[in-house]
Length: 109
Image (cartoon, rainbow, N blue to C red; front, side, top):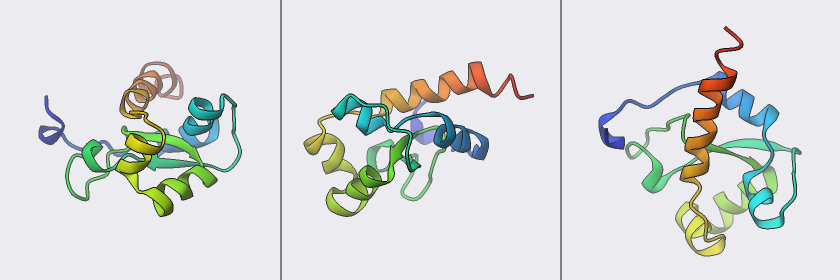
């Protein structure tokens, strides 16, 4: 199924779990540290979105406030991942959501 043919997932509990339980993706990958301070949920945009303005909660990352601010206001989505960090966050986002669906959300039911 292509990303354009499926519906966006809306899951506020998932976003809350990410913010409360996961460290900053960027701090881990670039600095090698576990940072749990000021974590925000960042919806991946651009080529990772289902459509122009459709946000899919399953395609997001935990990012600390300083990195989220840098991504949003200094560089922009594509430049930040492709040129500044040289990382593709999509696989991590997909694996994080799969982990949540199979290990976390079923325990709370």
